[in-house]
Length: 201
Image (cartoon, rainbow, N blue to C red):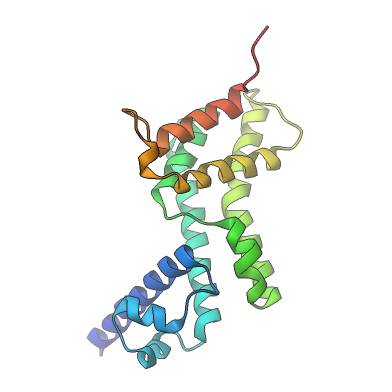
């Protein structure tokens, strides 16, 4: 019985992993349960054993799981970084770039309108709390320490997360110089945010 439970758990994790990959790549509307079953390598009918609530329930579950992974990962990354704003923001970049991209724009305008409004609002709030609020809190601590100053740190936090996430879309062919990659680009963008681009007089 225990072996059967373990097998079921492992199979369900494979379903969740496959669903997350496909939803992240194609969006909620473009993915069918048949696509997910094919990705896992099981029969379409068997998928309902692991996802009895259907596609919407599966999308909600994998989105919750993805958001929680980001929340925990960002918290750990910032805890392990040196206690200054540049190191902390670089740790944020390292974490975000180590994970599959979260296309928040597509999720907002394409995925969320197709699921139950209450669930869409809840998932959007969870994503905001997991991705934007920790970076805003980091900037607030930096402001209290005299490292940065801005009237709307939430706006800055959203801009930083958005810039870093957008680097997932940079093609490999763009890295035509030694030591240039998404991480170095992210660090350069963080420096721009912290230093600005105006000449100093």
